[in-house]
Length: 232
Ligand SMILES: C[S@@+](CC[C@H](N)C(=O)[O-])C[C@H]1O[C@@H](n2cnc3c(N)ncnc32)[C@H](O)[C@@H]1O
Image (cartoon, rainbow, N blue to C red; front, side, top):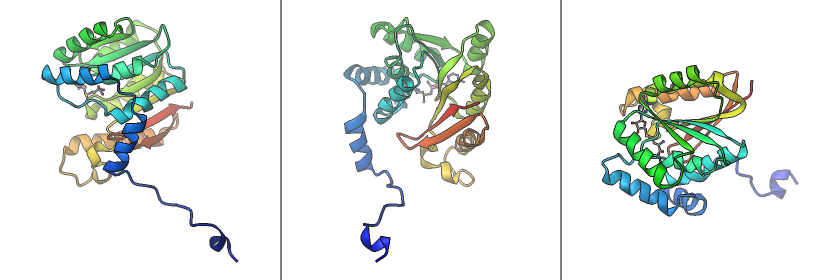
C-alpha cells in the first residue's frame, strides 16, 4: 500500500480568494473601529476619494507594527489618515508616525481628525510632495524608520524605496500597497488599465523580491501588499 492510498490527498495548490472568502476574512479579522468608519464617511463628505486601505488590511498592518516593536513609522500617501490612524494606534507610548501627504485639503483633514482622535502628538503630517518632504526630513534629522508604508503615486514607489532604505533599520519593514495593481499586475506587459501605474507596481514588486538587502513576500489582502524585511 502506497502513502497516497493511506493518506487523504494533501492540497498542494493555493486556495484562491473569492468575494465570499474575503468577506469571511474581513468579518473575523478586521480591526476597523466605529470612529474609523466615521473618518471615512466624513472624508467622502469632504470630497476626498474613497481609496483608503480596506478593512481586512487593518489588523495586518497593526500586527506588523506590533510584531517588530515599531516606534517610528513613515507613511507615504496618507489621504484622510485612515491607515495612519490604524498604525498609530499600534505604536507604543512615545511612538511617532510621519504622514506624507501632497494634497493640502487631505493634509488639513488629517490634522483635524488626528486632533479629534487624540493622536496629534503621534501623527506628524509632512505636507507636500513626498520625495521633497522626506529628503528634507532626512537632511534635518538622524531619524531611522522601523516601518515604511508606501501608498502614494505608484510611479514613485521605487524612488521612495531608494530614498528610505538607508534609513530603515535592520529588521525594519517596507510595505507597499496595491501590489496586485487592481488585479492587473500579472499582465503588466499587455494591460490597458493605467499601464504606467501597473508597470511601476510590477517594477516595485520585482525590486522588492530581488533586492539583496530585503526578504519579501506578497500578501493578497485588499489589493495586495508587498512586505519586505531589511536583512542586511
Ligand atoms: C491611496 S491614497 C492613500 C491612502 C491611505 N494610505 C489610506 O489607506 O488611508 C494616496 C494618497 O497619496 C497622495 N499622494 C500622491 N502623490 C503624492 C506625492 N508625490 N507626495 C505625497 N502624497 C502623494 C494622494 O494625494 C493621496 O491622498
